[in-house]
Length: 540
Ligand code: GLN
Image (cartoon, rainbow, N blue to C red; front, side, top):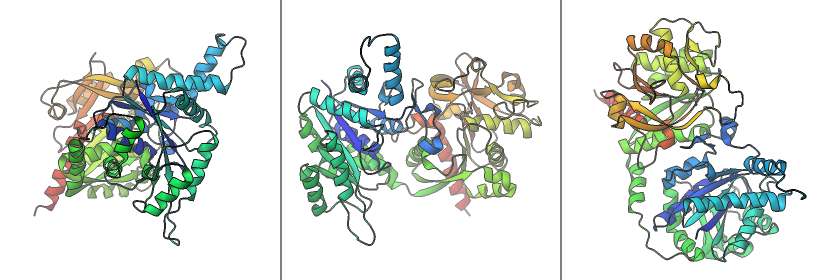
């Protein structure tokens, strides 16, 4: 029998509710309980695939090809589970299913309503995950903030589930903000009181409150106040503080006694937690001495959330190499406006060109790749970064003037990157790219093979374009090594340049499978090379 922990958020978004969810999962995992997590996203989009990462944050790709909300990336990185499309429930999916059912006549004679039809569909999908995964505890996080109109059907579904499941088998954790105004100098609990009031108005009483407070652990007085006004036990008020690395948060909450209380409230067997493995992982991040500087040359560069998985993969690789990774976001349009500004890349230990779409900033990315290639700066190209590396090499080494991807220039004389053949007949945007985990054959004796230590790997994809087979031979004759290809041999997946300290680019997104205890091989190799460059520069 699965038990349920519902996680809601109050006051404002961006409180780290997802990380609290991950931490709850970790506290249960180290006690030997099997857990997984579901994210409920109240937006009407069917999935995150069509959303702009600059506004909404990165699109996280699962093994099964589902394009998910970025919180699912945190779940995977903390909990080490591989999620499926069932783990993300959106209003779009719920409404689509209910409306399709209505069209088939399955509600014949009845008026189709939010309660019970929409809420029933939400509950069905939540319970389906419990059934399929057979976990001890299912974490169910609701996106957005209490009080959002969109979120109401989800919260109503949670309320019903709390009534329907056996007493004590469900728990509600509410995450809020406790601000500290400089002029006042003390943490204020009023916003928390208000957001709990809002919850109770729709029939939900939290059992546990996690207050996010940038100032530090909440003093007893504020905890007492929250407990009294929000109707929870004083020992059920916890503080989430700023931590570095983020993987330390479960330890911070455990120290406050949250793990014990979770088990007590859920009626779970009291087991001694084994934190040794996790503590070791966190310590690796803390012990890092050197710092390498990486230039992340992208388009949504001002907004860190657009590249969460890339950032985390770089940090995981840093911890494994014993160094911190300082990531600087560079908007590549700058290199187009002021071509000389590309020189600032010489200060970096590594240059990364991540995935992307469309024309804006592309010439600047190509300039960054050329700089990395000709100056011998460690380079990692991901997806679009891979494709543009091929464009750069075609233009500047093969001398194919005007070479381009047809994504940017449909009439280029040299379409070195072209649409995947199976994409030509597709005109819907949502969920139609080449997506998810695909096998890649790795060529022995190459850098890629040394990094992966295997001739067959699985990595996650998200693209519509690929290297045009008509140019394979010319590129290889000119020095490009394609060290990875699809199982059917029809598409190139990895490119590298042998006479360079580290130049590797992949059609897939290895960052999605990076874990704090198991860094992604391309990222590991990239940071290792960057660290060598840093140490080399210091040597007299
Ligand atoms: N825009 C490119 C494509 O669709 C690259 C996509 C990406 O970087 N995720 O193939």
